[in-house]
Image 1 (cartoon, rainbow, N blue to C red):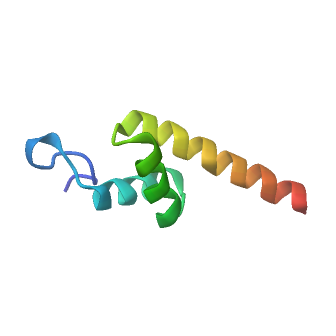
Image 2: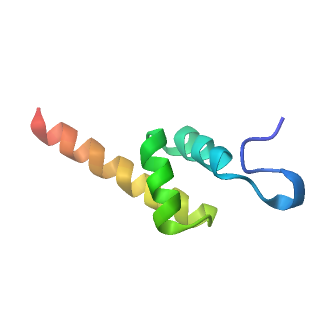
Image 3: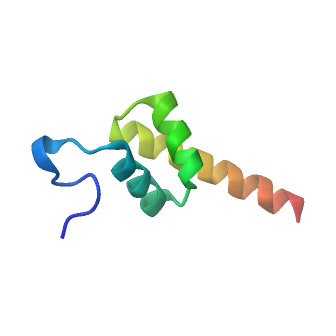
Length: 66
């Protein structure tokens, strides 16, 4: 079985599959993933890079509150 975003028909995946991919690979929320897709577009490497930045910022701000 392939992961979301890998091996769909014609190499294209829908936004729902991109949300799943971003959640699995980076741990961001559904809402964050949807906003990111809207802002960045559908380029997977760019989405993953930006999602990792979002996750790192969230972790940094959460650890500074403790």
